[in-house]
Length: 149
Image (cartoon, rainbow, N blue to C red):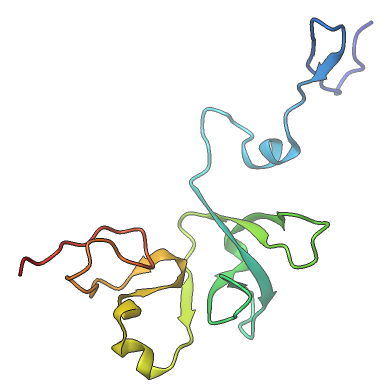
């Protein structure tokens, strides 16, 4: 029996046990990847979605301490969903156009800039003043040269 016109045939494969496997592409793939040969240039963030005071933007917090967030223009959002819908405090996955301009906001006390970890900020962005006495930064994933004593 043939599929009605306009309806895609779902791909199935029969296991050796006789059960069928549903190999229908995930809906997010259909949404974000209409042409498999030309994937979008995108960035994935995981955090907590919140309201913004800026029109046409949302805030996206790195954690539930609310000390750092990015302002994201809604025009740059390709997709978002809750990572674990059953978990009330679960984070949101946000997929953005890679060219979206973000505004990073970090809230800290001035005394923080005196400490050893002052070289880095949330979201893994290194401020290029990392202390040379550490081989590896405690906050960001970058390697930093050690000075010889």
